[in-house]
Length: 240
Image (cartoon, rainbow, N blue to C red):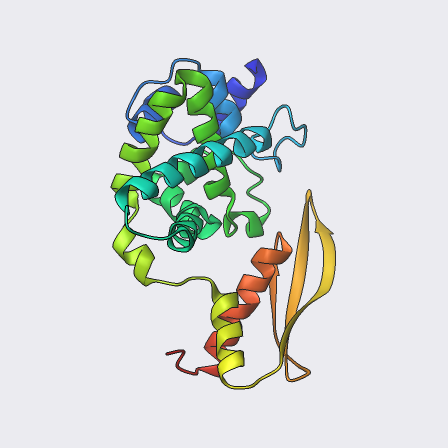
């Protein structure tokens, strides 16, 4: 972990030490700093999974999902399982978490290959937020991690009313539009290529057998969502 410290501190702009910047984001002073250094290290800088944040992202994703599920279960005592599942999905989806991470200022701390312009426009900051949650759990335990998520993330950055009213699943929107208007719609993977340390997928949307639009992303799911969003803008048809 020692080499991470010097790399990360050299990377971060500004004069504040990392621990102070983390304290502002977390709401408490980190105890074991190397956990957080690892959480902020993207694999485009270090491909070794023991030296980047992917394992912590896996841990943080599981912890976040369980705490959000408990929070929604208590907040909406009269709602059915389907509603709770959809709300949890909207809260923990990559777009939501990436937006939260940007508002927290986490993008100023994450170390990644800045020569790869696509990374800066992807969801790596939301992924780093999940890794940060994993680091918090290892550092101070589950109970205080739960407090951190509720206070510093959900109550500070998540507008449940807006999330409930907004559907950002563009693929589902497009499929619903096609069904209502008796159109044939399909998603097809057009290309899969390697860019640096990442794979980039191109997914096309076929409307009545003709290519309507193409979206790119670091997963097929993300590429499909991008393509669906572009398609909705292109057809410019009310979805009510």
